[in-house]
Length: 164
Image (cartoon, rainbow, N blue to C red):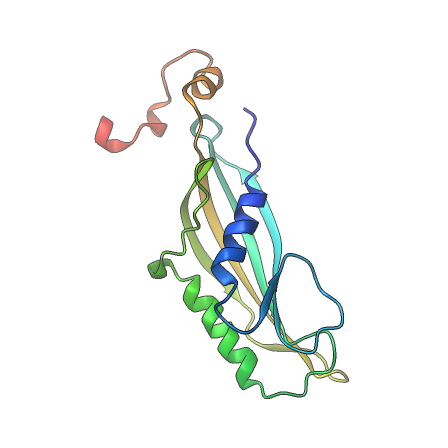
């Protein structure tokens, strides 16, 4: 079964979710020469799971940096930005990212939060790494489902309960 890679959709949805929630800019790359905090959408790893159900799981990392140059501000600013990231990515705040029409996010939850950690004593730089795990389903067409099932009826594991 050939999966449609959802990485670009996930990056776009994360960017839309995180942009504008604070004064920190959001990047999918590490910028250079930054004097103020920024959010970096880091690693996204996908793992195949239920092939016949078109389901993928994976992890993604969101990092907050106080900048690439010496940080001279209060730690109150990055702590507030970190709190906002976690608030907007909370499950009960509809953090299931909109990946339509190609995929549907089933769940996403925070699995690790490093807290604000100093990464350079000389430059006085800090980072907060937050990791999430997720599961999503590709929204296949009828032909893709039949090809995957080798012309056999859909796997019972993939049929929603309300149709059984």
